[in-house]
Length: 224
Image (cartoon, rainbow, N blue to C red; front, top):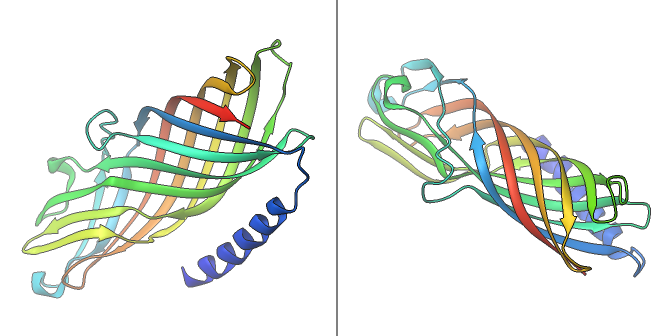
């Protein structure tokens, strides 16, 4: 994990410096979105704390997204578009994953990333103005970064409740925006995220899981 962060953060700093040096012709676009997000089954492994006997667990979890329940699913990104229609940016998404009671390991009464399964990525994007008419612009985007979920786990008498940097993450998006005027637009897209998560549990336990999300997003954009 430490090697990943040592690689990511210097790269992000270099990207930021490069963006600052871009010519004034570059366009900045801010996007804000919500939508419907789900997560397929994935396996959770780890070890319960010493107070619970340090016993291992291995369970298949059918994650629930509950996109429209508070705290709701949402995201935001900033993209610096170049005259070549290549864009560089940063994106944050507040995703959610609840473990149903029947899927949780023995001794667990709560297992969720609901405030949330936060994904932060540095993105590279490509757009095609005019491909679908004067106002509709299709685009694709991909990024790498980190997962920083709010880990909410109750295992026996141990309660884990807080944000942790749990591992690397990847994001892929494809969609189209509709220009309302020169500054404002609306858009729809499909978005995929993948994250590896290793969390420390209260009482000395650990939890490991790979979470994939699929989302259909709608949102608004502002360019300047």
